[in-house]
Structures are given as structure tokens and as C-alpha cells.
Image (tube, rainbow, N blue to C red; front, side):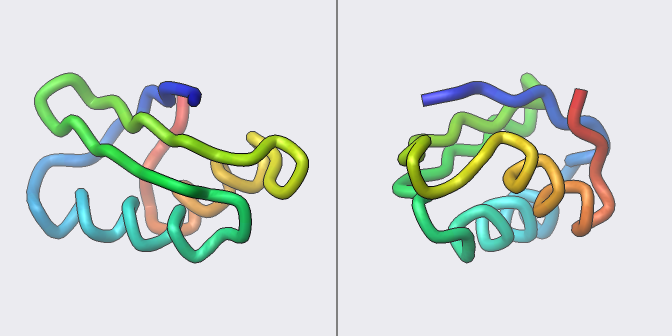
Length: 66
């Protein structure tokens, strides 16, 4: 599991957008968004999906990954 710092998330819609974008990626098993901390915990299979792909999926939704 990895924890990503994501800026720009503020509401339930943001949470769903990030969660859905990540879950569409093959290899992502579970996503937990913590709005108050600005973090996203992602359980994933390193053999199937890269960190860059996950960052790109989040950034495509309009959020910044630090």
C-alpha cells in the first residue's frame, strides 16, 4: 500500500472522482480517500500498475499529487 498526498480535494465529489479514477486502473485493489488529511491510501499490485499511472489518473481529474 502507498499513501499519496493529493491537493485540491474538498468534498464528497472530489473523493468519488479520485476513488473512481484509481479503481478503473487494472491492479488497484482498494482506495481510501482522507479529505481532512489530503491523502489517498491505495492498495495495488506493483506488477500491474505503476505509481506514475496512479498519479496520472488523479491529475487527469484535476488534482495535484505531491
